[in-house]
Image 1 (cartoon, rainbow, N blue to C red):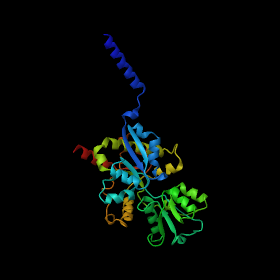
Image 2 (spheres, helix red, strand yellow):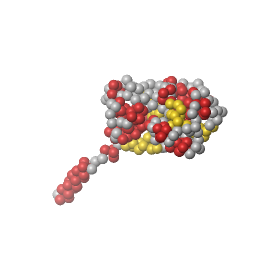
Image 3 (cartoon, one colour):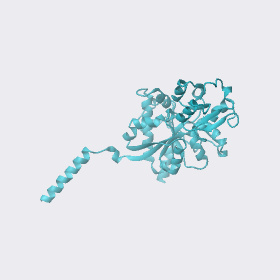
Image 4 (cartoon, rainbow, N blue to C red):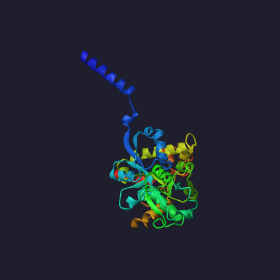
Length: 328
């Protein structure tokens, strides 16, 4: 009898302790999401993480900074579950057969500014000058070549392209006169102006349809974990709804969230740029890289369409395909 009472007391004590010290994160599904640059264009991931929306949806997310193409390689290798990257960065390995798919579009145009040394006063002055990019093949490199072409230059012949690194490194090189020009995203261009540099071109004002940042995963992940995929997307939808309210967010983050969109034309522009160095991209269509938007079906996440930024989009058919693969 004494032994039975003792066991009962221990059991009750264990239950009380587990209730008092229960942490929801213990039961959450763990996953990793990588991003390629500490910039405004990647802010949707930070907004979702800092708002604890992943935790709200039963996810224990580790956010990893993997500079430039490292996020792409980590996703292909299976070291992370999702990656926030540009459409063009995703397109190159996808064209080579990698299992990648963009499930959401966060930024529908390029917002870079072309900043130059103070002695470069006109676009024509750029000819023959040193133009810095992060890394050949990365998003900033493709955007730089895209802009130079729009400005009437042949990127391979009319300027000297140099690999320097991330935006802070490029700005430091510009200030040290190691390079003559580079592109940076807001608010970094203001730092350059404060240091005496010039802004010669604003890609945001050009309004060029281009799939900039989005959320990329693999079809294998969607097939294996469709429920997790839905909760990941629900977290981003709720974050977008919060930014759509125009409260409690700095202007750059709000600007980023309100330009969220992905469509075929924007991806096609990315393919054309990739096609310059990858013959598989010249005539490829966007089908298979992304799917139709569920912007009209966010009610399935308990939200109304009017609560979201105007152009936020998620590619719903990707999830349907994942479910079919999983059930088959």
